[in-house]
Image 1: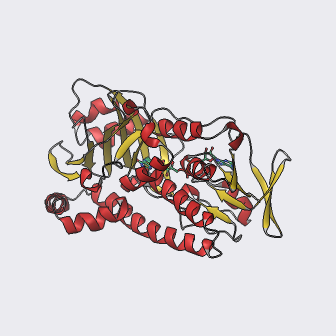
Image 2: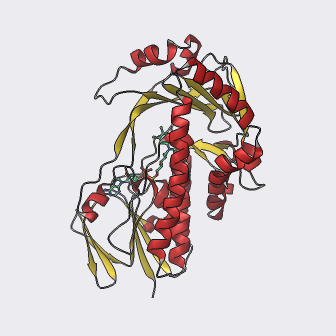
Image 3: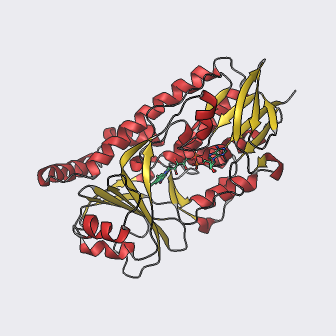
Length: 376
Ligand SMILES: Cc1cc2nc3c(=O)[nH]c(=O)nc-3n(C[C@H](O)[C@H](O)[C@H](O)COP(=O)(O)OP(=O)(O)OC[C@H]3O[C@@H](n4cnc5c(N)ncnc54)[C@H](O)[C@@H]3O)c2cc1C
């Protein structure tokens, strides 16, 4: 008898786990998405670590069009006055087939969606209630349909409404005190940074990350600024005050259409009261973006859960949670530390930071421990 799995939410986490299970003949997988169509937010870029790429290669990522992704080999650190401090050699964490990769989120989502059959995906579906019936879970949707399944995987993102419905308590993420401004640059002739790699400009209370997202001369620009939560923000005025006041030359990064969103993070990782219900991706834990690991962790979690459920291990809930908790702690500590270090304002601290970076980026033990533990 096939085991039935319902996946709630068709983001990176949900589509990855659905693809992994699709290949297993003893499982039947269905993804339930709230929206009417897949959200393909065009310009938004993501970075994926080598270990994540090796998971995606199992479902055929290596076959996507060569022009639609990029493999940067370095992360360049710049001070606020555009002076290069040093670089991190990303290629040292690569293997022949799994390389550090940047691409548009929409490219990844489309790839994952196209790998599924249309009868693996249902749109316009929102969970109203979940109840246990013997060993199974009965899902009641708001449109009065239902599904009786062996496992539920919840991957409905940072605000996970499904979690509040299932666990019968409101679980809201917290504002991390900064906003993200995003834009796409299309082949600027006077582009100051290394076109083939990732550039990180560290400013007072802000930082900017610029990287190619494909081989079509398109660059993702993400600017994180510490900022009180507010309903309306005049982006141009904010950029002038917080960024251009520190370096006027950064102006050309913000000439195209800008979008912004407040950054929310989780208070703690989520474990369900039901032993056959699991949270993955941002619904499990939402990280600050300063280690660029949100999408990678969504994919890793999908793979871990897939492996455990495939083995039909009674201890799966505990094993999955323990492993995720460990990974979450490692990445969260580094993300929070990066956030503070990137935003130093004190000149002495900045000098110490820049000198330390130069030394640490050449120190194998540090690199293997601080970054290798995350990327391999
Ligand atoms: C500024 C910024 C930069 C980032 N940069 C990077 C980066 O470089 N690298 C990286 O790895 N990560 C990055 N991330 C994080 C990354 O984008 C997320 O961690 C990742 O997309 C989470 O995937 P997910 O599948 O868990 O959730 P989502 O992608 O949010 O998907 C959730 C899905 O569930 C659906 N849904 C919502 N509610 C319901 C419901 N009630 N019922 C059914 N469906 C529902 C949604 O419509 C959506 O389709 C960044 C994040 C930010 C904020």
